[in-house]
Length: 409
Image (cartoon, rainbow, N blue to C red; front, top):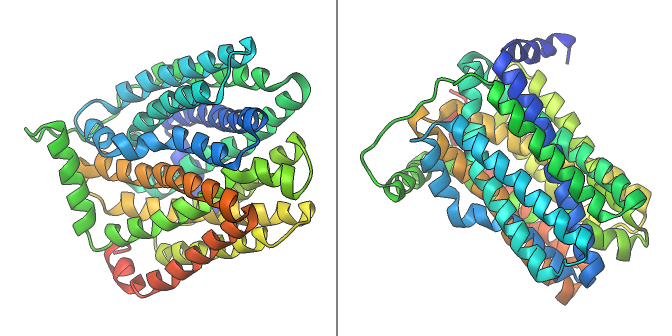
């Protein structure tokens, strides 16, 4: 692809508010991944249990399943920037509280579970508004580049967070990583006040919040393009993204290494995702995205199967990069197709379902694969998830023409 592809990135970044928003987003996403790697490591130190790793992932992400549609309805009736500001302060507070708990030596698996769940509630309320506000910051002409840049920044944080977190854990202990998390969440809370009020697509329906949430679910389910894409995302979210939460067990039990291996694996997933994000941001439009969406789904399944079948650490590292890149491309292509087709007044609700699938699916998947790993073995469980992704990819191929005609038109 020629360098002309970067023109779309430059055009999107000419918008001042979008640049400020993305700067804060990078800091926040870096802090979130630092929080996750630190949580996984302290959980493993306390329990040495794959089930507890799965439960902690569920604590972080289950709020998306519990309140996801309501947060989307809220984002369609209340100023989205105000929601983002408030929840950003909440994430900083709970990250700092977790730091105090770990630093003081009071941490137990149960207490950590509660703190991680409260942290997850803030994130789950933040993300639908954060995703829905992107078109309001840059306009429809730069939508595809804006969505890709948003995901690129998210996955740059996925790369930077584990790298910084792993270094802090190795040098000064896990409490230092949690302390740094609080700073990385607090700084974006300040940058958000530099953004001018964007042009929200707020529409008062006259219904209760739950009624608006139900309308969003019905709209998504009836949509002949968005509905199948969301269904496909469920499988990659449940069985694909969950592998990151089992990396502590792979690093320790399969590869016989420590925190350095965990940082390598998680950071490499992020590096692959960054490359995938650059590829998506340079694309000139939405044509061909359905095909890319389906190919990336197949690569997720194949990558997981190969990762589970391997016992050599330095072979696992590039496989992790392939998984990370494929997951990013899968998510960005789906999100771009959805954002391009959804009605403006439904944007928050549909995005909340996207978040619910991406985060809540990981919550369900981390629990399923965590318990399955204890019962049947870590590698067999991950390989089974990869096979399921491949099976569902074959099922999705039959609907490719309908999705293409509806969402790329």
